[in-house]
Length: 205
Ligand SMILES: Nc1ncnc2c1ncn2[C@@H]1O[C@H](COP(=O)(O)OP(=O)(O)OP(=O)(O)O)[C@@H](O)[C@H]1O
Ligand SMILES: [Mg+2]
Picture 1 (cartoon, helix red, strand yellow):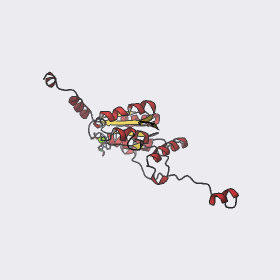
Picture 2 (tube, helix red, strand yellow):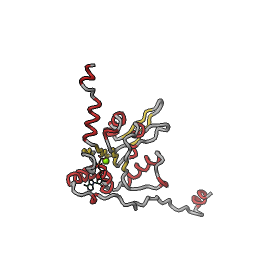
Picture 3 (cartoon, rainbow, N blue to C red):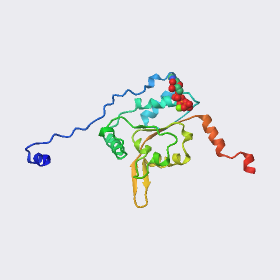
Picture 4 (cartoon, rainbow, N blue to C red):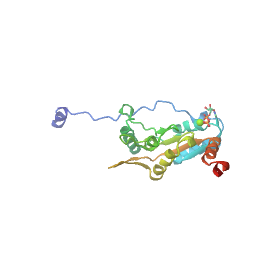
């Protein structure tokens, strides 16, 4: 009825207003990091150019702390990017209150994340973390702790900028142009490598 009135011109509907989520929350600030000038510089260069970055350092050297401060120096999303990001988040059911935000996504999946959680899949071929990080950052802390299958599955989105989920009779593709930031501990990596190759004695047996 309201629609009929609108077209008859008797009661014109008001234009819909886009609801933008207020970016009121204060993000952790890069200025809180003492020293670490080269690490901060690398983070700034990565943020400016959208480059991927791997941070390697001993426990407590501030890798997680640095990564958490990256969102504070990222550029806001452009209008076209905002629409793309909102579409993916809407499909995933992650658009809080239907409101849009011009803040770049910053996704931090835990290292126990499955392949489907990272690149999408599951019952209704939902977008994964890589697609939820579209036009933003995918941060993988404790990088070597992720399963080789999960890390391998990220190759295709990194190369093509999209995640393709193949099903028996159809395929779904979600955009996934993200900046990959990873952090690892050199000791953990060495320990993993030593476990992966059997010791000479074991091989001879
Ligand atoms: N340069 C720094 N300036 C200020 N605080 C720092 C700095 N480096 C480390 N810290 C402090 O040390 C804590 C531990 O750092 P963080 O958890 O980021 O280390 P990490 O490199 O991620 O370690 P892990 O390998 O164990 O995950 C931080 O929460 C912070 O309080
Ligand atoms: Mg850490």
